[in-house]
Length: 422
Ligand code: LLP
Image 1 (cartoon, rainbow, N blue to C red):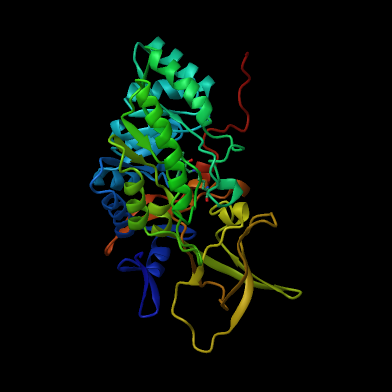
Image 2: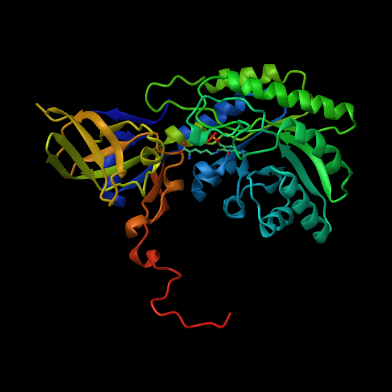
């Protein structure tokens, strides 16, 4: 359920027609529904009622400050993968004690920033990283709270680019290596072993892989406990999928219930790192049609949003529904077209061979399910200023990020920098 619905034929974000937002803020424009993201967070949170848990929103999916601030207000924790994300969380008023720091390669300065800020745990992804964290913590005179991210070697059956829990992936350590590293970490007085983590991939559309992963991680946690290394929490990662087209991912209630059941024997706390499921369908990208171009047998709908704004179709051949924002026209034709942006790359498309009502230049289109990994993965390629982002709440709109200007594009650059002796 999301709050982008048609009213009298016109697509709205909650109570505001998208047309009005496009007029006010220009296009391309990211529009987020606060009711949708709040609801998604609450539903997921409630699905784990009865067990001690923290929902740690995966900031990478959408790191807009206003959106993070909404989650912080709900009491959310955060899953971060860089010091930059930590900076954003703190700026948004997030509680560092509910922050988990994941990621395969943390620099010393990032580790130090996390320890200074008092994050809850650093998820460690290799023996080398464990050693680095110990060195940095010792230097700072603190104990670093750590969990090992275990790679449970289960197949999440998702796109290979977003699968992370297989042995061949670069993420985490194997169960065998974790068995070896935990006792070392437990003996290190610069480290404080607090948990175990796993994350197997993204856009997962059945509960089975999650349960397989939990089984393996839980077995490891039990073993460690027997050896006198008790763990305070178990982090089940993120990865729950959403519907882009015809997928049928488990409802968060079903997911939550399955996790609760699988973790019934677990007495510690449970952490989750959901990203996409919270924000994916809480956002659309609004774009204006520039031209309808025919070339041989093909029709191209050229729009003002491009792969720099939304890279998922180019990157993963991802499907995003695209629909007209306005009312259907009388007698309009259906066409099959590629919806493309102005960037000089053949991979610059938002949709291919898409059946859609024939638009005319000036029409607005809404690209759905763009709230996760949309703006977050956008860039300035082709010197295109990045889009504005707007949060909608009922009949109110909040400009959460202004559109970039040309001056923003060259910030930090000099046409004729002075030479420096280095
Ligand atoms: N935790 C860790 C350690 C992760 O690596 C990720 C996502 C998450 C949590 C959140 O996963 P989610 O709940 O959003 O599935 N750019 C790709 C998705 C990459 C996901 C990377 N890791 C996309 O657009 O599909």
